[in-house]
Amino acid sequence: MTNDWRKQLDAQLKELAIAAQQYTQLTKEKRIALTRLINTIWQSGKLVRPYKGQFQLLYEDIYDEAVQNLFFYLCQDNNINRYDPERGEVMTWVNMLLTKRFFPEAIPKVIGKENEINLENSHWENIPSSQPISLFEQVRECIESDPEFIFCKEHIKGHPEANFQAIAQRRCSGISWKDISAEWGIGITSLHNFYQRCLKKFANKFQEYLYI
Amino acid sequence: MSKIIEVLTFSAPIPGDGRHRAEELRRQQATQAKGEQVYLNTLSVSFVNYYLFCMGFETDLNKSDSWNVIQQTLMDVADLSLKNLGLLECRPVLSDAQFVYVPPEVQSNRIGYVVVQIGKSFREAKLLGFVKQVQTDLLPINQLQPLDELLEYLEELSQFQLADNSLTCHQNLVNLKQWLENIFESGWQEIETLLGTPSVNPAWSLRSANGAFISRGKLIDLEKILSDAYGGLRQRAVVLVVTLPPDNEQEMDVIVEVHPTNGQDYLPPNLHLMILDFEGGSVMEAQTRSSNKNIQLEFSCEMGERFSVKLALGDISITENFVIC
Image (cartoon, rainbow over all chains, first blue to last red; front, side, top):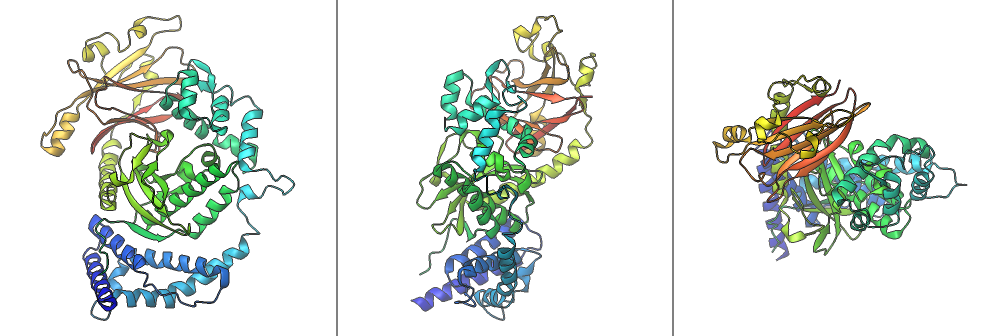
C-alpha cells in the first residue's frame, strides 16, 4: 500500500514536471502546473530534512529558507527543464538540490541574519529603552496631542465633527465603523474612504513625529 | 491511496523575514486582539507576496498600506500592491475557519481577495482561493474560487493593462483649470445635451456669490468597446460627468459622477468608477449594485496634480486623464 502510494506520487510529480516543461513563457498553464507541482511536493512530506540534529533552534529557520529558495528556483528561468524524466524521479532531483545546494546556501543567510538583528534592528524598535512605549501608544498620543492642529482640522466636507482626530480616536478605542456612522449620520464608505486618504496624506507627518 | 488534490491550493513555508516583521509588529500593539490581527495580516501578505513573486508577478510591498507600520496599526488591512494592476487583499484565516472576515474599509479599491490559511505552527500557510469582489463582512470559505482562476485573472489584468497603457499614453489630458475659463476639450458637452436636464443636481444650477458649478459630461460608449471585444454581445453607454464646485482656490474640489444615458433609468450593475493617481494607483473607488441611478466620488486636487478616471465593466475598461494647471 505504502509502495503504491509512493509510486502514484512519483508518477503524479513526473506528469506535473513534464506539463510545466511544455511552456517556455510563464503562462497561466505553466503557473498552474508549477503551483500544483510545488504544492504536491510540500504536502507529500517526502522532502528530506538534511543535517538533522544540527543548528539547534535555528534549524527550522534554515530549513524553511532553503525550501523557499528551492521552490523559487523551480519557478524561475525554465529551471524546471533541468529535470530529466529519463534519469529519475522528481522527488530524488529536488531532494538532491535541497541537500547539496539550497540547505548549505541558507545556513549563512539565517545565521548571518541572527547576528545582525541586534545591531541594525528595525527602526521602530530603535526607540531608546527608557521609553518602553508601544508603537500603538505613540501613534495614539501623537494623534491626541496634534502638535500642529492638523489632525483636528482635516474633516469630512460639511462635518467638522467628523475630523481625522475624532475618527482615529474612536477607531483606536475599538469603536466599529457602524457605530461611528450612526453617531454622525455619515455613511461607512465615506468615513473610511476619508480616513484612508488622511492616513496617506499624513504618512510623512507620522514619520516625522515618531522618528520612524 | 494518495489524495489527489483536485482543487488547486498552494502551501509552503512563510518567509522568515515576514515572520520576524509580524512578530515585531505584534509586540507594538495595545491589545492582544489587535496584536493578533496585525500578526496574521503581516504573515498573510508576506506569504502571498512570496507566491506571486514565484509566479513571476511584480509586487511592491512598500506601496502596500499593510506594510506601513502606522496604517497597519490604525487599520485592519492586508493589501499587497501588484505593479500596474492594483491592490490584492490577502485575508488570513486560521485552520478550520468556515468564514473569512473582510473589514468594511477594504471592501473597495481592491482587484481581488485571496484567502490565506495560516498553519497552526505559524510557520507555513496555504492559499485557499480567491474572489474578485466581496459584498459582505463574512465571506464563506466554500464560496471561494480556486487558485487557477486567480492566475487566469491576473494574467488577463496584465494583458489589459498593457493594452490600456498603449491606449492612454496617446490620449490627451483634459485640463480642468481651463474649464474655469470656459475652454472645454472636444467630447465634453453640456449636461443638457447629454442628459436632457440642465444640471445633474438642481441646486447646482443656482449661481452662488462665489461663482457657479461647472459641469461637463462625456458619453462613454462602452458598447463600442464591448462590441469590439465581444462581437456586440451587450450594449451600454453611460455618461461621465465632472463637476467643479465654485470657490476653488488653492485646492480644487472635483466631483466625478456616472449617469445612465438619457432615457435609461439605471446604470449597469458592477460598473466600477475609480480615481487613479498619476502613477495609476487607485485612490478611490465606487461600484454599482443591481439598481443604481448614479455613482459619485468627490475629492480635492492640488494645482499641477494629475489624476485619471477609470470606468470598468467586467473586463472592459476605459481611462480619462486629467490635469489641473
